Image 1 (tube, helix red, strand yellow):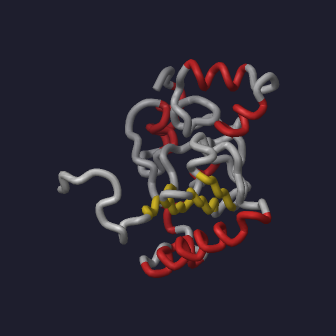
Image 2 (image 1 turned 135 degrees about the vertical axis):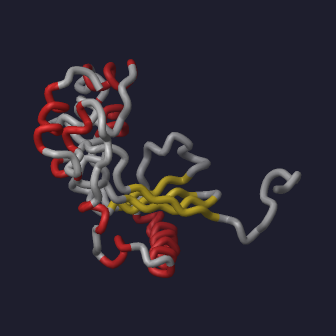
Image 3 (image 1 turned 180 degrees about the vertical axis):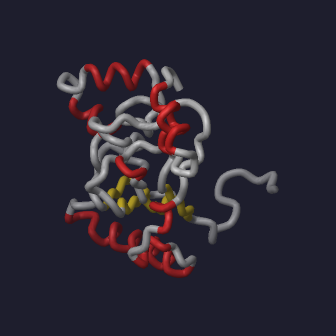
Length: 184
């Protein structure tokens, strides 16, 4: 632990992050694999299955009994979904499908709403960020960089409430009973 503030070690100039699945919110429990690198200047995200809905989508009832199930219930979620036609940008930012690559310049776009990944002016920065991320994924043996998806077969372990109906380790009669239960 350091008592210093700001940039303490120059070599600690980036972080990596990853996501796969938070809840059962896509058919067959499909994951939403994304990997990212964040520097002081940029955030670069690689969406490995960009044809999937990151939030679960508008056509599948998730383990928490809602559409777009990877977004928790809230007045904001309800409002944006009910007024999507009036607020198309907000709907896309919060619930839309994402492109394969995303690049955001943090100082100019702290809300990360302007994707620069396909802007010719930022190709060099994007390529450098992707190369750094790719090297990290290769060096750490991340299955995604090898085209593998070991997570798809992982059991979803919710044991109570509606979400238990997706737990394939439970007997079918128990899953069916949970599917009929109201609430979560």
